[in-house]
Image (cartoon, rainbow, N blue to C red; front, side, top):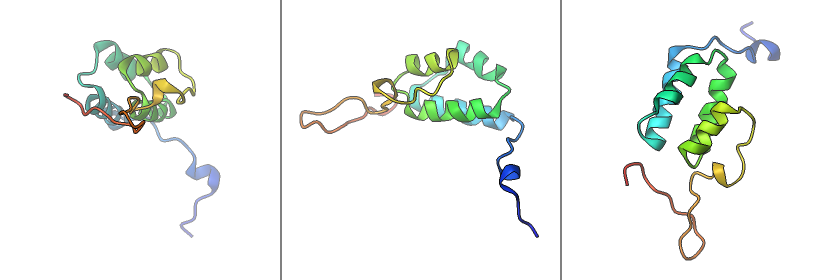
Length: 102
């Protein structure tokens, strides 16, 4: 009773405006004002798994360029320097980040 099969628990839910708002909020926090082309691309997405993927990309992309590239050419390239959210290092090789607005 009350148990779910593995297949049932992995069924994707329909995409909602809340899914899109979560992604847009993350983008705004990371990179500032969301460009119109990105707003339009996100509004056109109907697959919740693509939104989920873009949330991961937004959390890890180093720049708008890297995020937009992933929107235009979806793939699973969340590796490499373009997806290091803290790409700069100090003199000792330790990573340091920039906060939004600096």
